[in-house]
Picture: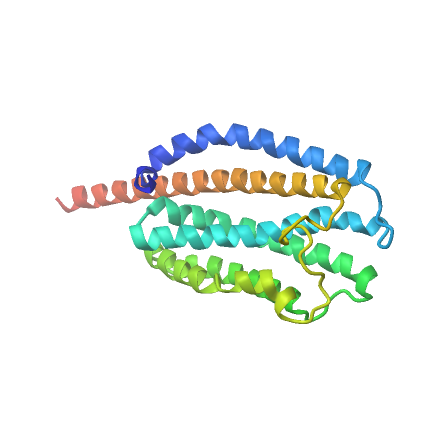
Length: 247
């Protein structure tokens, strides 16, 4: 199944079919999520209106981890099966995941100030998410650090796989250590400890952000494949002209 989409043409055919549907779902879900988050859901009895930061912060945190997991899986596929499109997708996803991580850290800081009385603490959850952001930056830097694109892909893929150990640390940090950050309330075993009036917009935003991630990865992957094709054609033309002049 994976080998079918190692062919860029097949991948682009699938991507072009998925893109309009994913774009429509993104607009609908995020639009509905924003309406319920800021228009229909109530303020929290303790946190007041500041609780609405949650509707951006929590989905961004989920997406920061999801995007890195996606990169790690794509990198593994690229390394093991020499899947060129997998590397392209991993490279396309990295800046998107880094942006979600920045949004997560920024909104968390804005939420932490009124709740904890400070913008930042070296809390286990916050620190591990900051490490995740540096892993994104390292992945992007390594991928572009070599003249040979294949070497950059391999080096960044290895970093992605090594850095994946940080994901369970982020997830379980609030359970393993005594932290200021609240424990899981949506993904815990049993019923979520969030009222449906808040859970519905939270889930709408989470799925909407996921669709946004799909859209952006497709757009960036298409651009990267087009750029590689142009470079390949340019190199072939230069090689042909050099051979002609030598003859």
